[in-house]
Length: 110
Image (tube, rainbow, N blue to C red; front, top):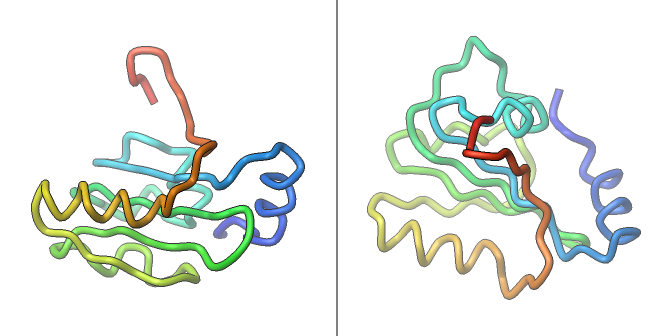
């Protein structure tokens, strides 16, 4: 089941954060996958991002090959296909946010 956007936004506001950026690549982030409602049976091979701002509508950034991966989640969608469009898409997705939550794991072990 996908994350409750209003609950996350309340928590972000309480912590003084501008948003929470969920990210996954090849199933490397089970926390993000669970929160995004992507089960272990769903194979993903491209990077995807889901930005939940402290206020406003969430936004998605997905690869053209798997542009459907986050269609079940609310929010606008941007599609990238190359490294330069990924970089510009991330810049747009973050929208000038200064303090953003993300999962962290030493040596990228998640």
